[in-house]
Image (tube, rainbow over all chains, first blue to last red; front, side):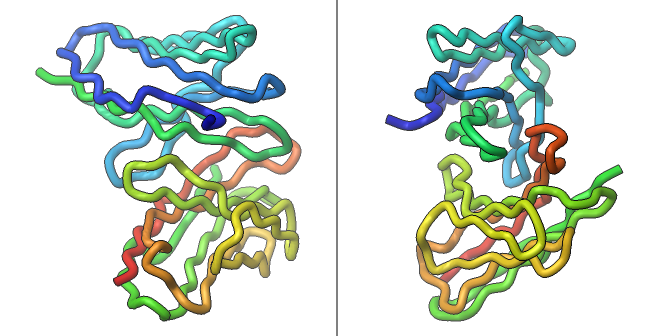
Length: 109
Length: 113
């Protein structure tokens, strides 16, 4: 079983739609959680950290469920510029991060 | 502000040739440094990480090696490249003892023919 699993997609949605991505992790001792965004042929960039109480940054909302070992990302009012691969990332021990393979989002006009 | 540089941006090398990729970080001291590889359509795989000069930890057995000759310089090397070494190589840094978010450089796209 992979340490971090994501639905690869692609998710094809129209502009203005709401879309949600899910991610599960296998190590119950995981300590920190993140969503990164990666554009085609570019480096990953931090989108947001995920906190136990859930957190929001503009149109983006992240949720963490430690009991189910589940992380989600909700994007409201999708823009064309949101098209990218979204990486679920978990820190299990030390400073090492484990990356999911990513979920592809395509926003269409 | 901190910036991270990698070069070259792209590289095409024959099988059996040597490799040297360089990463430098500006605007911070004593960072943690990381080398990742991303194969086509796959997730990032941690190859090496370093918490200080001369301190290298290897995550995956392979024909690659890493060195940290200076505080903000991290080098990835190979004596003889294999076809399977093709991929997108990313260097990242994080503050030492100051948080666990990692910040990535622009990457080197390596093709081994």
